[in-house]
Length: 274
Length: 118
Image (cartoon, rainbow over all chains, first blue to last red; front, side, top):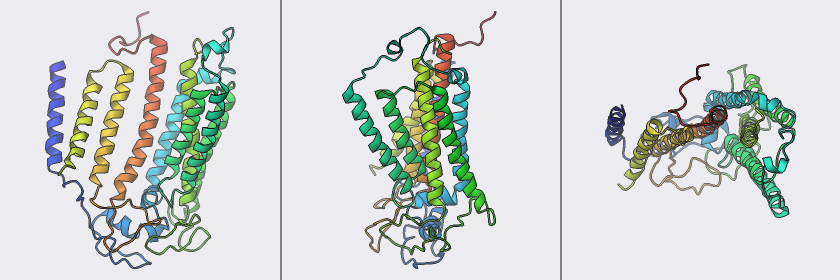
């Protein structure tokens, strides 16, 4: 049986190796490398477009108003895919809550009769707590910056939410312990559901044309600033529903991942409570 | 030509992950193997969209000249989704591992042969 597995892995290795030899050389992908040349400043222009990525690069900034083409793909062109991904995250958080249901139902996570210091042995030094709190504020600010500037600079809802969740992880490993797991779970799951609800609500707001249509762009509202093609300093209020979707995803990812972290951390540290 | 190292790294990561996935008995090591496989796939996708002497697909304060090129944006968007999904599934698998250890006092898959007969 072991021999068969080794042979199978070697065969798969060989297939992949032969397969990549037939790919395009690295650094010269399919598509038109001259796709950004001689682009008129406004309007949709499909001259020289050979593949999907060429269309996104040539029209993404003008069509969605977002300087970040990756964000325009994630939240506009492939917005339905992003909704599915947010739903996957929601389902994972629900599954973990379901797995640790009896643990989460207990009022206090500290087992009766055992001193708290023995259940969570840790150094509660003033330097660690203050330093961790300081770093918590700074990491949280950076995460909020990433979420809000998702359509202008590298970043977006998923990245910013993950950064903010890492701040929660810092608090957990340094000093913070939730005494009332039930209340924490309620708050976190409320905000997580709120993020997903905002996302779906923004999708249904443009239902007149299609689901997740970017109805705020194209110069009708304050978010519909007309952005000509080319480099610019970046306008925070632009890109239609992209900042709103980014904010919704950021809220959902932050609270969802934080709930996962808090649940797993407390569940792995407590004995005789499940 | 030295950029072929990216494809070789992908093949090594993928095969290592597959090998550990099949032959390791510890549940935590299986989770780590899936993560290695995941990283290999991410590297492969990013490598597919790479373009020589190109910038990131972001127009903010871009130093503009007439010969500007950009890397392909769609693989980056796909990887962005894959990273978060990978994190979430890893968390779910670790949660299952925690419960498995708590109920059976072992993480060895050879000893986890169904429910004991009552």
